[in-house]
Structure formats: C-alpha cells, structure tokens
Image (cartoon, rainbow, N blue to C red):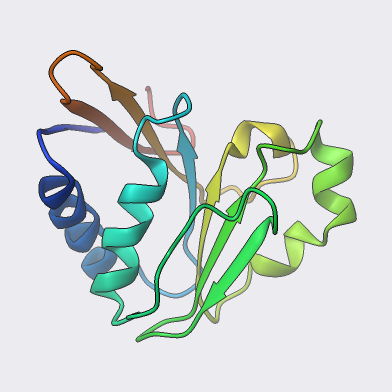
Length: 143
C-alpha cells in the first residue's frame, strides 16, 4: 500500500500520470471517495498521461466514457446504480479485458463482480486545506 498527499490538481495529475506509466493493459482501477474528493481529477491526469487529449468529465449521466490513447481508457461511473445487478445489466464485465485500462468511480456499487486484480484508489479530501490523501493498494492487500 502506498499513501500520497497532493495539494493541487496539478499534483493529483502528476500522481495519476506516474500510475499510468506503471499499469498495463487489462488493469482495473476502483476509485473510492466522497463527492468532490477528486476522482474525476485523478482520471483526467491519468488520461493525459495516456495521450488522450479530449476533455474527461464525470460520466455520471452517461455511465461510461471510452477514450483512445496509448491504451484505451474506459471511464465508468456507477454513482447512479443501486448495486451489482445493475452493473451487470450495463455490461460492466465486458470492460475487464486485456485491451485497455478501466477506471471505475463508485466501484463499491459493483462489489462481488469486480476482477481479482483490482487496484484500489481511496481518496480523502480535506475541504479546508484542499489536500487530497490517496491510498493505493491491490485487492487483498491490507488497506
């Protein structure tokens, strides 16, 4: 497990870019954090590191955003879903393939159907200071 603090969107993007350099096709990231914690900001930095130059916004209403870069990025937001049954209904498991990287916001709403090699990214925001604390760990590691 790794814990990193960032104090600006630029620092969050740099953290995400470093992770983008480490991950390979087939990786699935589960992003956890309250509304406004910085999940989408993190994905923006990750996408930029993959060479994606189109705007990355929260796909809350469309659920899934697909982007082409050095590796394809599947940006999924499960905020509006009630649980794993609905996630299966949108074909979530089809994105767990070897061709790209999948980033899932509100991943806890798909608990039980996510792959074993999941990379968790927990984000806690201090609203007073603007500091974000990231805890990054693999499924099964002691969080």
